[in-house]
Image (cartoon, rainbow, N blue to C red; front, side, top):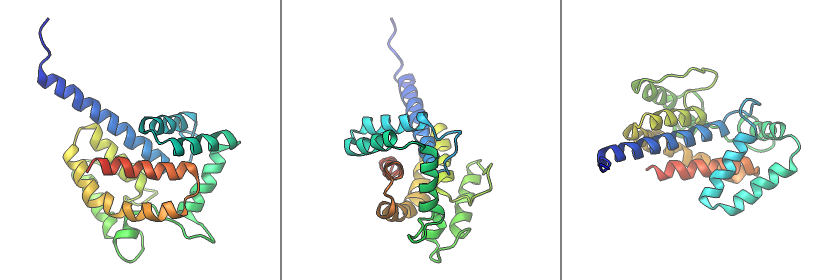
Length: 200
């Protein structure tokens, strides 16, 4: 039987890596969307658990499973928490999930960073199908990374992470980990940090 061509094996491995990474980014993007019945379900939670298991994050997994077991309505619970964390949070401060708030220096939306992010998308042949949020919302950035990874555009992915994602996400994460008490969002933000840092 002829030996496998090393080139084909490498291509297969690269394609598998691309598909896995793309799926991970897509999953992480879902966790940062406003919770909807269409995706906020057992499949999403099972995926979170299996990722935590594969990383051997036992404490986080235990806390996550406890939340699932003890919460009668996961969707309502997550909607309340999402609103409190990212939309309106009196008496706490909200944690805006937009890059421009952290990078443009004036704390406002639709700033220079929003334009730079949109330009980066367009230069790579992508655009927003959903204009309800600014281009630099974390879920769009993660969806974009999923698209780049899915096409094995690893150089663009790394450039985006280093120049437009990690510089603001680190501040967002620091703030989130102080405010987020909910196992779902604590885990989501820790996983985003882990997988975007790993790619650098």
